[in-house]
Image (cartoon, rainbow, N blue to C red; front, top):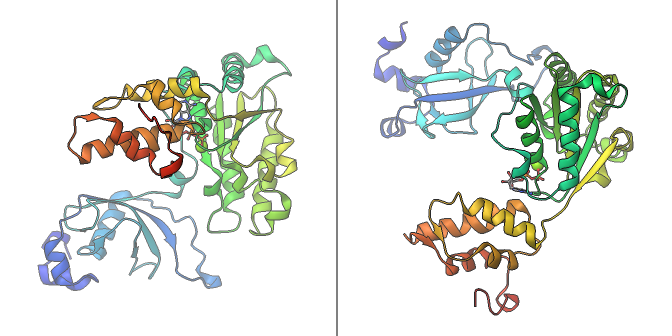
Length: 373
Ligand SMILES: Nc1ncnc2c1ncn2[C@@H]1O[C@H](COP(=O)(O)OP(=O)(O)O)[C@@H](O)[C@H]1O
Ligand SMILES: [Mg+2]
């Protein structure tokens, strides 16, 4: 049956949604899905790594069976034909909470995209990161190395670890580094390596290093490495985590000094890192919370980009935010006050808006008496 000939009643009968919801919902413009597997597994059902060989055909196939279905991000669509009950997770629905119609474009996000093609592009530079001078100096050395690996002979930088409080610029610095170098950054969140199937993580690590090697010079950035690099005593929680750790160690050892690959890992919990992994890092850099001077610099940097004016000065704000990270400054102070101002239809962020944003962090009594006095 041709898709566009599908009579309305039939469209509705095919879906699991009630007629009223279909009638009132908008047609989806686009839906992005990825495989999520079966709700349960029999030994004969091992269909991991579904591959779509013809995207156009897949789209027609998908649309025919799901036309009329409600699409909500995070929900699932189930295949009813080739792999009955195989689930696809809805990653993006545009608009969210709409209905698949004749004109909806359905995109299958392949496992490959999900895993390692996470090349990151940004327009950050090292100087955008306020403070963290030692780590930045090391990044400058890495830049020199990646531009001219030969020069370093056996003395190349290879594996370095960024650790410290969350929100202090570890991920940001890695992005800035790759941007300045114009080399590929392979950014992977260690939590994503723990896949649905035992062995997924280990093969992801292998793929990652292989791709980085082919495209060298490159930087591999393993964010939140504690998720897999847990101390052995925690590894038993997930059977395959130790397998991932071993794969990582093998790959890290396999890079020779002139391959033009540098691995940077980041963690908020260095104490929990497996010793075997931690010892592979030749250098560790602690990311610290910004001091007052640095907070002023961070406020200035982000205040400039606010869409409306702001009354309190960076200096005043820095005084009130001891112990805040760069992320806190941006999200909890500036963004919250800005949103407060918008909600009041104000075209300036006032002291009151900032007070409101900070009220979550200061209890009535310990709020500085002369806040903005
Ligand atoms: N030192 C800093 N200088 C400038 N901005 C910062 C700094 N630290 C954090 N930020 C802001 O906070 C965001 C989150 O920081 P991020 O690098 O993800 O922290 P981490 O990886 O250490 O948890 C950054 O994208 C940036 O906007
Ligand atoms: Mg981070």
